[in-house]
Length: 276
Image 1 (cartoon, rainbow, N blue to C red):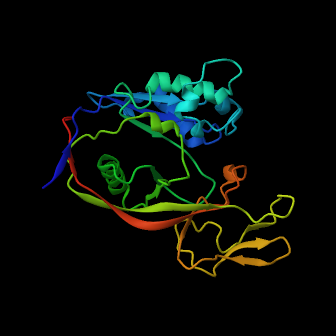
Image 2: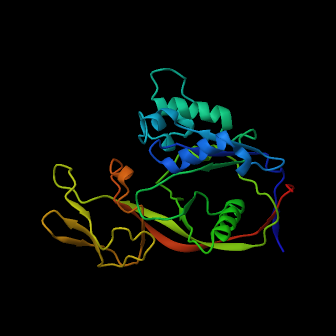
C-alpha cells in the first residue's frame, strides 16, 4: 500500500473567526474559546483561537475598507506598512506575521477559518488543492465525523479565479494514519452574474425554483432568473451543473448571483504522521 509520511508532526493550529465581521458563528465560537479553551485544547498542540478582523466585528460589517479574505497575496503582504494602506491589508500583514510567514517553514500547520453564508449551502468545506492528499484526507475525516449530517466540499481550484484567503498562510500536515480514501467535491466552473441592463443595473433576480437549491442539479432549460417584468431566463449550455452560493448577499458587490460547479471524485493515498 502506497502512503505518504508527514515529515514533521502538527504543532500549531489556529482557529479564525471574524474574517468577515458580520458572520457571527465564528465570532461567537472564537470568543468562547478565548475565554475557555478546554474544548479545543489537545495535548502536544498549540491551538490558538483568534479574531481576525476586530474592527469589522465591532461594527458587525463584512469589512472596513476591503475584503480581508481576498488580500493575502504576496503583493499585499509585501507592501510597506503605512496608515495609507487599507485597514484589511494592514491587518493581513499583521496576521501573516503572527501565523506565517506565508509559504515558510515557520507558518502554522493548519488554519481553520470559520464563515457563514446567507445561501442555503449547509455545512461546507472549501478545498483549494485537488492534488493534496493531506487536505483530501482531512476533509474526508471531517465529513465522516459529521455523518449522517451532510457536509459538502467546494473545490475552488481554477486557472483564472484566484483566491488569496486568510487560511492560505498555513501549512497542512496530518495527525494519525488514514487509509486511502475518496471524497465527492463540487469544482467551480464559473461565476454567474445577474442579468443587467444597459446602465449596468440588475435587471433580473434569482428564480424561485433556484432559490435555496444549492448543491442540487440544475439542468439546461431550468429557470435561473426572472426579470422584473416576469420573463423567465433559463440555464443555457448543454450540461447539468450544481449551483452554490445562490443569492449570497455578500456577493452582490462581487457581481455573483451563483457559481456553477461540476461534481467529481477525488482520491487520496494513505497518510501517516508522527503525531500521536
